[in-house]
Image: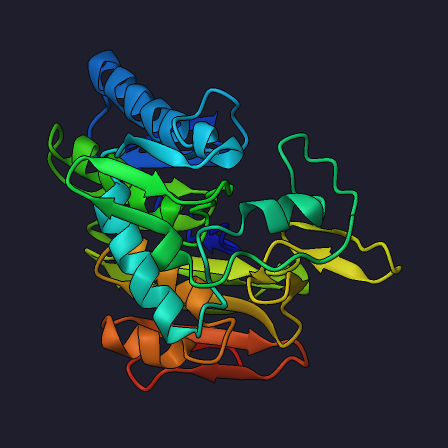
Length: 300
């Protein structure tokens, strides 16, 4: 998920590569300059992931399942992502559900980024009985739009880090819109969700990942005059109103991304604890909570 975080720039990287992909800004910092071959490999990897999983692309591999029940060849990331999705969904009593794509589109977060609210719609309940994965097939028993936003960008960040790190020595940081995985150490500022000019703290991360989410990053008006954002409760199709932002450090970005999503719901702290993820979150009234194992330095 998109993270409201900014890296500490006190020690500039030796080499920085910045580009746009999958609707967000990427930053890859390395101790040595990346060759054209490595950059091409990264671009191919990102495009392949997007072509497999993006609900915004009519040519995506999952697009056929949005209009008709059926089975498709399982994309390479299906098992690791959906296995973790199942644990995430169970921990949050199905508040997190990979079949939430149609509910998001109905609220206005659609392929055209129309941001026009057409009302709440719950995601299909019992999704793990409808969507199955195993072997080399991904099967859906009823048409539905798959959305892996709860952990997908984290998975992609992990894969990009592995690809880059296999080619270069020294420190590597991969930052996709604030979802960050790194080899080495970096101090990351935790941006205040209500004031982007401030940080609520900093977190020193070493050979790990930090991912986060905040309700103000993708927000638009609701049909009733209220506010909407991208963090919906899949059981109701309504936006979360209690938590403003979450930050998580874990061994890998997919786990951190999943825990950052979980922390918007009851069951989130237990999910994070079960997956060795340390966390900080801000309540919408400005209060801040954190896990006992959090190493963040908070400015409270």
